[in-house]
Length: 449
Image (cartoon, rainbow, N blue to C red; front, side):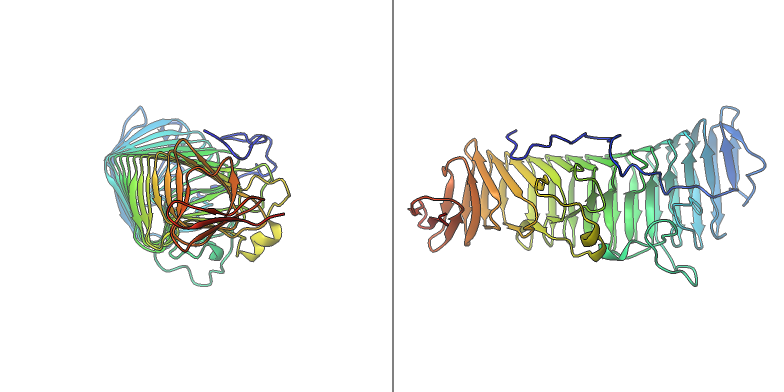
């Protein structure tokens, strides 16, 4: 596809040269669980924290594990190393958990390179930071045909909000609510969900954090619902998230993308009651470029579909239906997070925001309000009807059109074929040229030198 920016320093996926590949915040601190498997064998010294029923086979499989407990910070099952299959677990926990960086209070936790399948069953928690599942420290978790649900609960008395280690609620600048992430992937882990029902009351349904350089998470044929003020997925710095054939809903945000991370969606449909995607950077290397790729998706948001705050991102959309009820497809802005503003990466040659739309029809506006970095809009066999402001670079190729329905300001790349404007509407372009009356009666006017 035509590319208006050259990501010459981008290394997709893991970037071993990035300065931000600092050690993960994930430092499991649990010392006991109802059941602790170590390299496929029961660790008697670490097991027995709560009574359960079920059978553990000689090969390390767990059959019909069942636990119902209100013990605070309890881990139901911890799998450390080895290979295990957990069949039809029934885990119900309540009471306060702990900062999920510590991995305390989790339904099923995989660590230390463990390879774990969960097949069927359900994990339901009520309590702050009581994740249903966590994968960390190089483990691989696969979840098939299961129900995961978390509802949050009161924070412990005396809790003081913090970002990073000790965190038990989302960072305030994100504007989110709740205090539980249904699933969390960290520290070089990989997680896969197949045909699962995943629910979060508020904060997060599927989250990544503290990658240590690399995390991968994928959901296939899943129904994922964030009921309240939270997000469906988060691709934190160094994390890569894929949704295939999923149905999603959010009471606020579909997804958050940060730093050198990626979000990939295919044949995924959803509705959110806030804005669609928060794309933000800061505190990262200048070469960090986020990546968002969608194919054959249908998404509807109440507010702007994409909100980019002081970030570098390459977005590509193919055969998608993107609907903003507010009428804003893309909005770029300087971050309103004071800490990020002070620490954001910034240079004259930053990549900025690039969005390519292929084989689509778009209705809505592009508000390019971040004057610190460039924005590039690339239309490939795509019809756009709406407004564009902020003088982004606009390229129309392969029969693409832009019909302005309100006054617009652009920087034209290539020729003007495909430009149009309604009667009484003016498109102002950077550069020198003669004023032109467009087919529908509007005007193309140049700024001059």
